[in-house]
Length: 588
Image 1 (cartoon, one colour):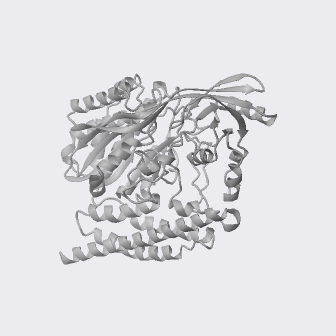
Image 2: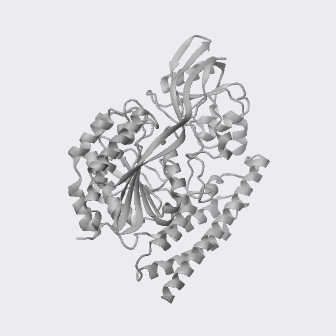
Image 3: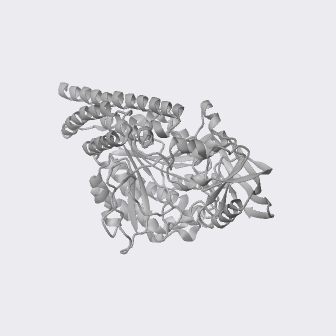
């Protein structure tokens, strides 16, 4: 018994819900902030459980620039005295009796702004405290550059919620210093925000901010388990353990199912074709993905040579969830999405959505071909099915789950408690994680759809050619894509006749994924700002000479040319790698 299907069935029987419930009780008593005593106690528990199961593990220690809000409040000084509870954002600056005139950011009500509109938006912010719905880092950063003295963001629900204004992905470098403006920034609940907005509409309003932060370098731990298979090539299963308050669905449930998956895999280690590495990150919420970034930087050689897949579990076990969809790279194949998820959905699974720039998606630069982040939601018979977009550049409509108005509203709040975990859902989500790990640890060759990925890439750039300004000519990229499609077809045909193809798939499929999701070098990390696939090209949609300041338009042209050069050169590099591999196989 050593096939994928047989091992998968065996693992399903090994997963123990009662044991996971006992783990959940332990995690529910720990507020797991990075580098805190209770955070380290969580690591103690994980390592102890791994030891008891005979799973080899190590405790990696690293420094991070952590940011924890301690206290925050908003007060109205004029026209009447009021006081409101608030939460400070991660990487906010401190404020002690800060006072200023309140300015309502009317532009935040528009979905998109041209460059000229953005320029107008920040005029007049100097010295003002800004009231807005915009919680993006780009707004925070530009408001700081414009001289705003503080920000009050409205969270559109009457429940205090934690958020971050960090724009640096993980561990900062020396060139990142200016991306920490430490502008005082808080969130208030919707009712208080609407009251402030009403006051501002009726005349000048003076407000005050008081914020106490714990912004400093601390030492934290990352527990890492390694279950060796027949090959040093490995599947990475990961999830963050740091939390807001108890954080039982974000992300205690994931921590628990990762433990259970490690126990089950250890019992059948001798049947694994590839190694499995399981890592619990800290620094996710209070360090902007610092743990996974530190690991990527310091274990880069191993990741780049050997990591074939990353399965990231973030927000799991949510009570009432009855449907699953995948965020993934697209290299996994749309057919895989439907096949794998059919048994977890009452109706046909929703199509996959390209991964977004969040949630410890740190490893694209290390040429990891497969990255999957399962997403869980509620689907009912009367729930309208979202229609697929007409253009590949339009966002894929997805049901709300964790955002404002979604059924799992409690993330990043005090209400993310043990009772929010559904036992049946926890068991399901554990099974999904274990099956995904098993698939990529066992299948030979690595199950990828490179041809489908290239067809999708071509569709993206054909759409760019239609919708971008004529100054942004992508025809050289389309020519490079055509050359790469021919090479990829030849590689996929040849792989069927050769064993041990992981290296060439990492080199080629991993590079194609990197081009889709990143815009910097493979050794750095893009900013912690969400962007669509082929991010620089996507960011230029709607950018024209007549709606963009001249200096910014010139900068956009520079960005475009450099990314076009990057795409063409790197795609030609993929073709060369394929030709070299085919030559080697022919010479054997």
